Amino acid sequence: MKKTILTERFQQLAGIKPLYELTDDLRPEEDDFAFDKMDGEMYDDAGDPMESVTANPHPEFTSGDLRHANIEYNGNSYVGIEFEREDEADDPGDYWYIGTANDGTMFAIVVPGHLPHSDDFDERGINWEDLVIA
Image (cartoon, rainbow, N blue to C red; front, side):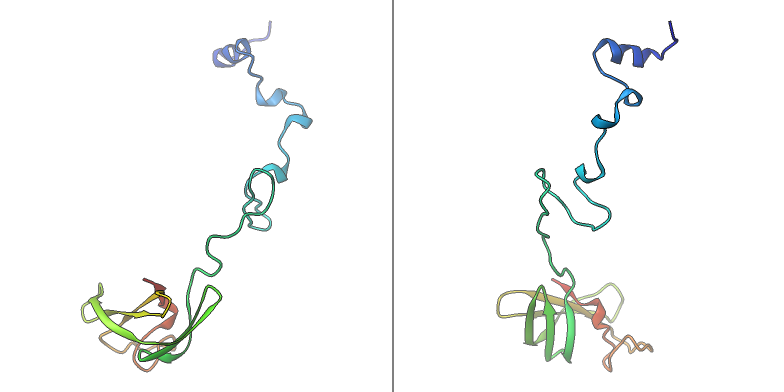
């Protein structure tokens, strides 16, 4: 008799076949997995694509300033959002500014206490790419 590992022998006694004995027709196909790595979509048990929870998770500043910002988020256009200074941010002198849309969506941005020298920042020192949902 062929020498086997003890755990493998117990599995055989329990009726569990080792993976190397599975035939090709019993092995799962690529498309049987819940997440298809090729297109990045999630699928339910029936194999149908699941809807994404967030279509656009990052808000995009399109124009304006802290007094009248225009923002695109989740398929909606928000015009004239007014930001107000709230809590102090992590860096001394920096503050969180919060703007609330008519539908209750809240946007937040850190406004630095000093003017950084970079093309990523506007004339007030704000990097609008850091705009987040509050």
